Image 1 (cartoon, helix red, strand yellow):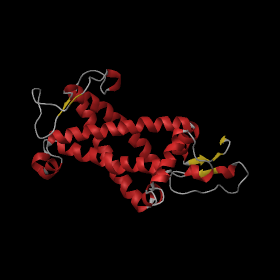
Image 2 (cartoon, one colour; image 1 turned 45 degrees about the vertical axis):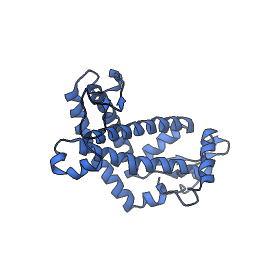
Image 3 (cartoon, one colour; image 1 turned 60 degrees about the vertical axis):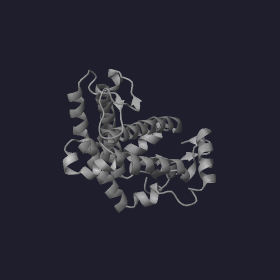
Image 4 (cartoon, one colour; image 1 turned 45 degrees about the horizontal axis):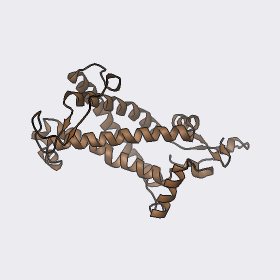
Length: 247
């Protein structure tokens, strides 16, 4: 979401359609959606190979694990049958697309001021009273109307910011830290996370955070009006909601 532009010339109904998402944002959204799902599902298969998480540099069957993960069913994994090598190929192939897409999106979003204009919360939006008001409105499923519906609200800005600027970069960096070659090439990166096994644990926690965000995001899209919400991410155009509901 970058700007609000009322379509002109404007019949009464058409005047309620605004530009919500630029082309670059829409492309990254859909490419990243596919990439993240492939990486999450292949990551679950990798987890099935050794479903235990450790802290430090070392971890094996007889070491103390801080978390024992369940075995994930085949319908949640890529591939659907047990194959550690296959899952790693899927994971690493899409990891480059994931990392490159994130870097390009961040650079373009800083250049066109999408980050500063649309994602950065204002000082007033960060006030506890304002945040609590947004939480209550979401709990009541009371969605913004009018031009406010075309802008990100405070909770959206905070959640998108946490995912884009914290969880996704951490996934890339911890993924690099887990690579055996990085121990020799960039030992400082491995040490920054406290060892390869610590990086693996942080990687899993960040992936779980992204998975939780996706679930909540899809629920909110369904509740807010999936045709309008998904349509705006395809065409860029969004029909403003009225007090009586969604147009």
